[in-house]
Each structure stands twice: as structure tokens, then as C-alpha cells.
Length: 226
Image (tube, rainbow, N blue to C red; front, side, top):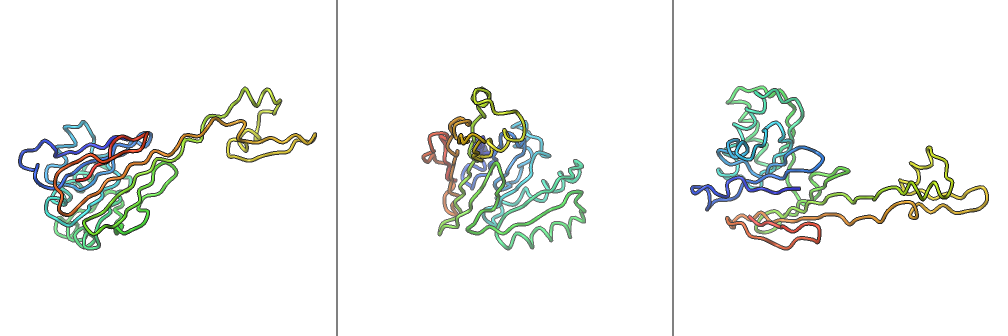
């Protein structure tokens, strides 16, 4: 996963809150944190197609965080995007989204879903998870990449003369078996050692405008507070 700040080098924006995106390996989608004015231009400079944006997380209802949102949502519709867009933010953001549709007289070609930010998992699937924790100075987000379960030891299965078929799939999922002769088949013996979860956390504060590095786990080396 890559975390890139979009307006980091902009002289006029260097003293306001950051707008950045997460580029997710394997999913080929973009998660956008805040949507400043000129956001589309910054994405183009990073050679990112706006059609890759699937989730937009607004951390605070300020002008610099949402000024680029109406234009981005309209451009996504004009680009014939049909896959759903999920927007996360404070409760008041829902009303703002309704006003965007009303006064821009735009009927989005895609489904637009709104989710209120609160202390809980806001995104949870088999590959990536984001846990949102509301702090006194802002929101903290913990992004976790699911555990790599390891490769199946095919040569080991052949040595044990386990017939290729449905049993291979069961062993991969962690099922144990007892053969007719009483031999115990322990799934752990047929799967390479699992790797630990990759995890990254960063704090989005109401009063911090600069970017600073925080500690990462062994597999992730960047934590960002903005």
C-alpha cells in the first residue's frame, strides 16, 4: 500500500490540512482522505485516473477538506463510472451531499453511499480493514492488511500420498483429518508459516497542519499525522 499526500508541495496549501490517498495493492482502487480544491489536478499529476477512486473519507467539515468534492463527484459521473462510491464523514456531510445533488442538478450515474464516521470499523473486507477511532483532537485510522495464510506445500501432500482433490482445499482452509489407518493430518504441516498482518495507523487532527512521521510496524515503515 502507498500513502501519498496530494497537496504537500503546494505553496498555497502547505499550511492547511492535508489531502492524500491510499493506493491499494491487488484492489487497483484509491481511497481518498479529504478532497481539497484542485484534487483532480493533483491526482492527474500522480497519474491516477479518477475512476479508480472508490472511497472518500472526509475527516472534518472545513472548506479545505470538501471544496473539491462537488467537482470530483460530477467528474466521476461524466466519466461514465458505474461502480459505487462510498463517502465517509461527519453527520453534517450527508446534508452537504444532498445539497450538491440539488443545486448542481446532477444525477450521478453511480450509486453514492454515505457512512457516518464513528469509533468502529468503517471498512472491513477479506483484504483490507480500516478502524476509525474518534479522539479529542480528531480521528485516528488504523489500516490493516489481512494475514497472508502462506502457500500450500504440494510436495508435502504428495509425500503423504494425499489424493489431489477437495481435501487439498480443506487442508488449505485449516481443516485437520484422520485417515482410515488412524494417521492424523494436521493442516499446519502442509501450509507455510503465516506472515503477520501489515498494519499502519495515522492521526488526523483538527489543529495539526503539518505532516510528521510516526512509527510503523516491521512490515510498514510509515505512520502519518496530518
